[in-house]
Length: 116
Length: 110
Image (tube, rainbow over the protein chains, first blue to last red):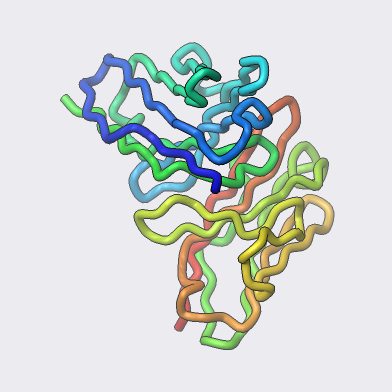
């Protein structure tokens, strides 16, 4: 069965970086892209960007351009999302999800807390 | 890219039907048949309920149905049940490898 398993919760100081991993199983990793979505406490879902697991092409949400980098390691079927220059409003649960046009399977979420 | 507009909340009694609207533009909802709907219970990851406007993934009850007219998509829950109480989000492909989510709707079962 398709599974996306994310890394554990993180606490970071403002200005630091965080890297969240998302390990896929149960399907051919390179046949689908990975979308990243975040959800601030009590807020809605926000699309962050997408990476093709086939060729590594990426597209990021405009508001995160320059601060976010998405990568994949096809040898371990793992996707990564790095967010730099963290601010307090980056505090959120970060999700990875399979595919772009219809994110169908989702990871369990990773809470990233940014606090001094 | 602005979020798609959904009502903040809708409610209904068990057995009734509720409909959630999702309004976008011709650049997203109106331009593509890639509208999906997600159910999210507190503390849980979103669950896909409808994709490609009106298709149901395996295992999703047929009480859930989707449709689209112009720039507005809709999710209807028929025969409302207690376990349907959750937040619901619409989502649309917006071209150029971008996605946009709706503002979210809280469904309350009275």
